[in-house]
Amino acid sequence: MSKALQAAMYCIMLVLALLSETASASSSGTFRCGSNLVSVGNTKAEVLIKCGAPDWKDDWTSEVINNVNTADELRVSIDRERWLYNLGPNSFLRFLLFENGRLIKISTGGYGYDKKHPSIKPCDGDEIKIGLSQYEILQRCGQPFFKDTRREERLHNVDDQTKRLVINRVDEWTYNFGPNRFLRILKFENGELVDIETGDRGF
Image 1 (cartoon, rainbow, N blue to C red):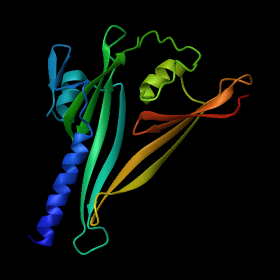
Image 2 (spheres, rainbow, N blue to C red):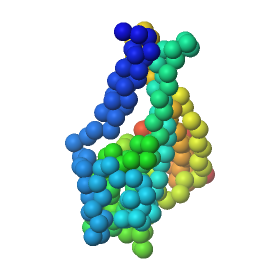
Image 3 (cartoon, rainbow, N blue to C red):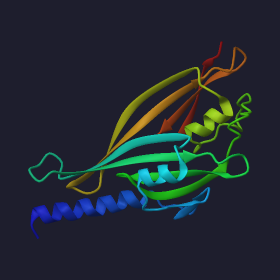
Image 4 (cartoon, rainbow, N blue to C red):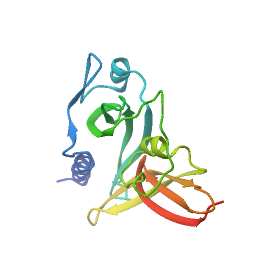
């Protein structure tokens, strides 16, 4: 088997591995948006026509690199975008994950929020939970005192010849709850809360 064919097979395997990361028990292949049915395989334009603009968007890129720094180096980039639809307090949030412009996963979150009459209340430990989206944090806690955004690269060794480079968008939000409480620093990766830190006393 030629090196080029081996490299191509490695990349196919890695792309399939990346796709498998999106599988979960809470996902399904369709959801009804008013009288329209949204299905896995739809384009972003088709979803936009059926459902209108989403209430929230996140985007990032995953990149697979095979035979890094050699003549046979091969790269495959996957552009991902997550749309969130808030269907109101009597329905569940819907998360739609697109890869390279096609819908590949539909997930159900917690109950939605009343967009006309938001009921933001002071945040406490029960309001901020790992796994929540930025949209959900905003609905529960309001705007943070400070936001910071960067991109982080993580290189994973698959075998002696193959490395997988994943580029994540990282956001850090700092909440100031006043002089009697400590600052809370929330870290998001690709729009999902992954870490909560306690900072200095607020002001």
